[in-house]
Length: 267
Length: 326
Image 1: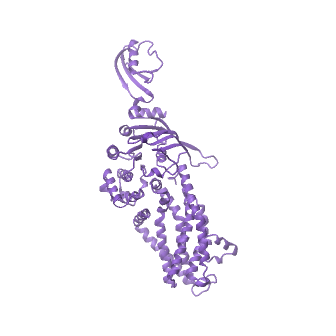
Image 2: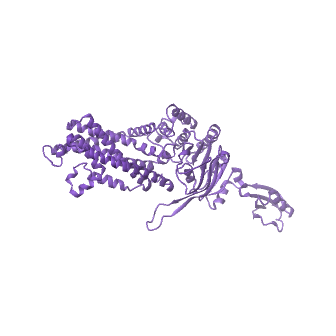
């Protein structure tokens, strides 16, 4: 834990050394919230059968989707991004030459991204609860937290496979293409998947993003007696059980191959 | 190879490594380059071993193999008496790596913040970490500059911090990859004193140093290994490599009058006739001695005025061993 804290401290100091970027980041975050608020206002009073299950509130629907999406993108992209950054910066090789474990180095490099995405999701969640006025109980918030952790672990597993590809091939990442791009379209993030043609809706079922965003909405927006959060969380748990060991295996193989090829510093 | 009584930190036997070159033409198979070819050498405990060689000789590949950043294709590497396998983490706490890469630091952090971070990765924390940082900064003379941003450092200061980072873990072996390559002459001299006084005398460490600099090797090395095109072409002490290796020696004979008719009457001498009554005589000391060469000249009737003994310089040795201009 102490070493993770040191990674966090390192990246925090680097982060605050770029003050203009912090300001722009906050502006873009608030900009997204306002944008969805006004889109929600546009739909207010109207009725969409697709949103009926979620209280017919598009603003709440989309902000909860964004809350999940932040965790998804962090889990999926941050490991691969940080591996590539460390390759380009030239720090990866030295980090791996220290007595600390390879897994610690890889995860430690991403921990700041994880913490940032947690804070960002908490902001989206807080805004949704406060502005929309969702009467969320403590147990509902705990469940949402659990969903977000499961979502994160699920996409972290995919992120490990993604990082393995980057370590070996440097650029070009099939995992991001399949689970990133497809997820944003078929994952029910911005719009309910029910608006898609029936055959296409089946693609959503194999995407963890769909189950994650649905779980959060089922917990917060659907009355308890009709909520299907247990089913969706089971899906996420199964994804993790399959993908997590696979992710570690891919990373180990990639590192071994990069060391054999002598390509750890190539990018 | 047996690692006799732990006298060696590392023993390498027949270590080879071939790299595939990046694909340039998708219609042709990828070319390969042999970076190391059956390298056998020993790194002696408590000594400075210098690895000399031209660019592309395989020096950095060898250092990275020792630091477990590259896996060799074949051969055996013993760390003390342990065979190194892919799980090389067991040596990584014992090695202090200094690479010529200044990008292995975080430029937005100060020197001290960098050392705090890397020190944690060397399993140091709290008071012990702070003490090691102060000690390392003091030994490289960076205490007064430790709280400046790394990006403001000069090349010399960056290199000092690089060495301070390697000192943090108190390793028994320092792998120094061209550590003085970016330093001005004064800083280089300061670095040499640092190796001799701090690493060798104070810390009683072992140093494996890659360099192009013959003067550096001559001054620091207890043992020199010359690498060319991935092969060890010569190894020995600086004294041995200055002439004894391969037993090649050269005599410069200054004579008056004529060269005795029929001299040399033996096939083991190579004689080049110079200007103004000089002869360059190359001979193999394993076959004959300089006294025998001189005696044969005098006994054949030669009138010898002066004799100079020349030993081959490291530069000449590199030229000859590499078989080309290096």
